[in-house]
Amino acid sequence: MYITLTNDNFDREVLESSLPMVVFFEAPWSGACQIVAPIISTIASEFSNGVKVGRLDTDVHSETAMSYGIFRLPTMLFFQRGEVVDHLTGVISREDLTIRLDALLKDN
Image 1: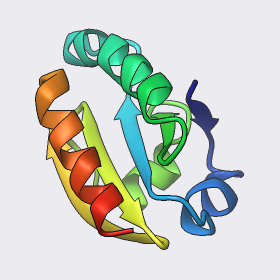
Image 2 (image 1 turned 180 degrees about the horizontal axis):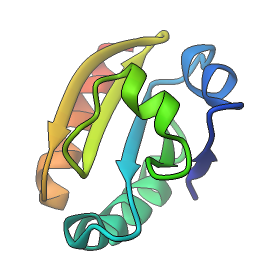
Image 3 (image 1 turned 30 degrees about the vertical axis):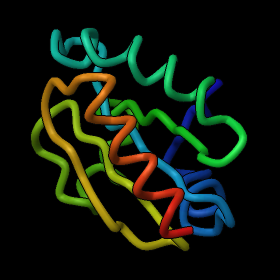
């Protein structure tokens, strides 16, 4: 399961999280986001013991997206102790995302 992120809960859920986190910046009109969304949902379930996964609709919560310079969708930012430590942009494979999350867990 993933967390639905908003401008209001982003700091609490992401920046103050004791667990590593991946944030999926998306928009409902983006075909690429629709391709990646099922991968994100699967990863959220598989890594639920050690990594938090959040989704942020950039159309509704553009303030947060703009503060991180998100201009291409989908974008995934990887956070460790409130800091961005990695990112992926565009359509990605489940394997690529799994490799990044495994690395994030090793650094935790």
